[in-house]
Length: 337
Image (cartoon, rainbow, N blue to C red; front, side):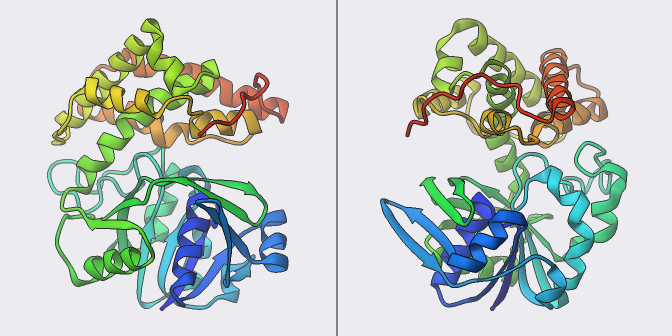
C-alpha cells in the first residue's frame, strides 16, 4: 500500500514506523527540525528499550507524495484546519482517510442520523473549512489509546499501550474498515472495528476533558488530582455534566464515573499531554477536549457550570501563553513511568 502519515509526531510517528516495518510504502509529512532529522537519520522508534529505524520517505509538502491508498491524519485537532487544504494532493480515486485526533472530532455529526445530522462544531472546525475540504465519505474514525512522545526531532518513544479502535462514521461494517483493522493488527496494534465509535470516544474523552485541563492549571499528576478530595470532586462534577450532555445525544456509558476515575488514579504519577504542552509552551488540545463538550452542551440544552468554569480558566491560560510567547509553567516535574 501507498500510505502517507500527515503529522508524524508522537502517535503519527508510531503508526508510520510500525507500518513501515511491515514493508509498506510509507511517506511522512513533517516540518522544521523534525523533518530535517527524519531525512538525515530516518524515523527512530524506541519501544521496550530498543531503538529501530524505520525506512520512510520524509517530505515537507504533500504535493511531493502524490495520491495514496491510505492517508493518516496524525496531527492534533487544532493543527488540522490550517493545513487541511494540503490533503487534496494525497487523494486519489479510492483513498481512505483515517483521522487519529483526540477529543471530539470535526466529523462528529457527519453521517450521524437524527436531528443533529450534519451539524458543524465551531470549536473544532472554525468556519467549516475541514468539512468543506475533506470528503467525509472517505473518512474512517478512530479512538487511539497508546501513549507516545516525540522525545527529540526524529525520535518517537512508545510509552505504553497498543489498543486502537477504528470505525465507519455511521457504524456500518464494511470491507474497507475490516481491511484497515487487519493492517493495523499486522503492525502490532490491538485493533478492532467499533460498531459505536462515538460511545467509545466519549469514555476516553471523559477522563481527558477533566484531568487534562485541571492538570494544566495545577501542574499536578493524575495521582495528585485523584488523591486530593477537592480536585477529585471537581473531576467528578465535570464528568457528570459531560455524561448528561452525551446521554442527551444518545450515548450510553458502559462504566461508572467512579470506575473511570479509579482507572486514571491507577496510572499514577503521570503528567497529562496537556500539561506537557503547557510546560513546553505549545498550543493545547483544549477545544477538542473541553471546548467542544461545552458547545455540545449548548446544542443539547444541558447546563455545564463546572465545565464552563474550567474551560474559561484554561482558555485564559492559553491566551496568556500565546501573548507571552512562552509557557506559563512551573519547573517541570521529573518524568516518571
